[in-house]
Image (cartoon, rainbow, N blue to C red; front, side):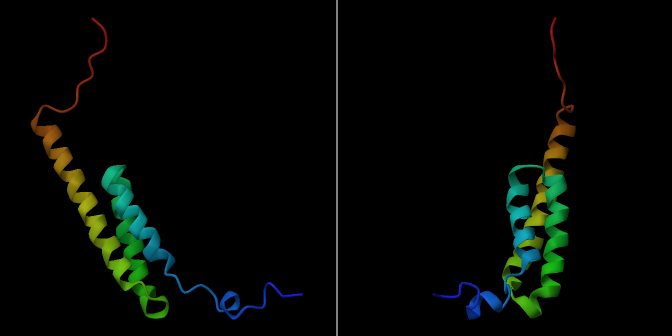
Length: 95
């Protein structure tokens, strides 16, 4: 009977940079939703991923996370400027 936990790949541990992946996901999702929240998270996770890149790799993902986080904040700034220049948001309810 084969031992299911005795594989060398199962015991070597994870080589994925989790912070880089989390930052990349936050950066991509932040372009479409909640960019004021997910943008800074992408930047923080990207910087933490860059610190771990020597041990776990994922330098490209971490750099992309930082760039996408900055893009998220720029998009938020543009949306805020457009809303402010057009008189802001108003809600019309009823008569």
